[in-house]
Image (cartoon, rainbow, N blue to C red; front, side, top):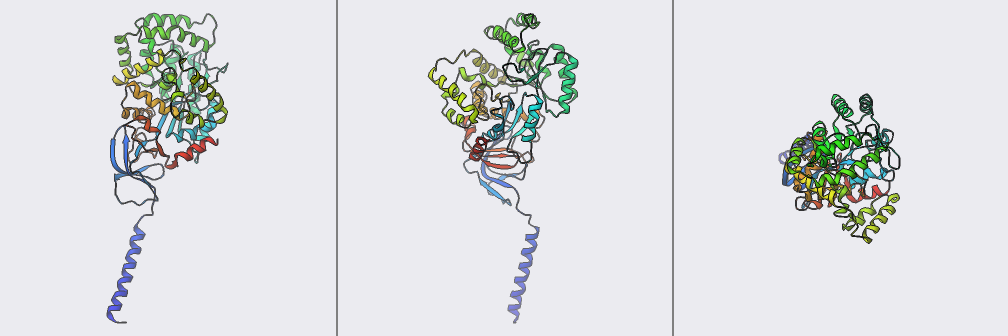
Length: 477
């Protein structure tokens, strides 16, 4: 072998050794990259031409398009928009057994990667929570309160309506109940409308001792300006109208007298009678200066207005172009009933009911938002023709209608819920180190909030799902 040939062979051997060394040092491909995508979240705003990498349940890199990648899978995000996974901040997983099995996949199919259950008895809730938190579950993250914590009289007592509330007639009973719930693993508590002032005080005290966030309706025995600062979120804007009325002191005095319940009404009857008697007159007696004072007191209490729950009188669901598609995705056991209601609504389009409270909700939400009160996006699904998943997008549209900007509507469904649970460092935005809950959209939600429904893929806990596959999975339950 001549010298030139020997040199060539030696060079080839050295190159081969060098390649082997480099290959040995190069880590194995890992994770998934969404390339050339526009990211949108309520903290970072709009970032175009991004590549977002996640590995397991963690976002590991965010870099400009064209960056070198060493991943297992690449998803082309060209022309698409990536937002954080959405929350439905007010759901009832065990309210209607027809919906319970299919709700987890149904939520995911609509881009909802986290839910907050705001009321269910523990013997029904615990199996649902265990199933949703199983390692391979096709389900959003779930946070739950256990039962509605009511007073001496229980509204949802199981008599002609679902049993999701429990009695707390005395402070001692309330303290024991909440401690028991903590031991069973609840993530927060939900205070309901029939509690007395002394029971409310102990509920708040006990929850604070146990580091449990507090969700609440405004109890009928209290005013919003009194109860609001003691809790972390308030649902439905309910009973705030009482505190915004020019005759608020008189209304409160009347309520306290009627809450003595000399007629022996059930909790549901007593609550309903007070709402029927006082709600619309209170709205008619709206006092702007007084209401502004109430709103100012609520500046740190997240409001979850559930506007879509009362929207039937303003925009009936059956007039929406995609309503029939939403009905097709419901469990078969509920579809016939909801189609009958839809047919009746379409046959009598003018009989949509009084719009006063729905319009009040839009108005008050807008004023609260303008004053800086935090707003959360929740629906009360499946109550009141609220399809799981679908109704959250309806809520987002109504929040825009109330005056929120699209970016702040996204905050209501991402950042605000995370803040309620002090999880803002872990979720709610698209940042390195945050959980891999993401939704890839075909349309820009800042152009039109309904584009949150233009779902291409859903990433939940780092698992990538095709939207249609999730739809099919929810319909098979």
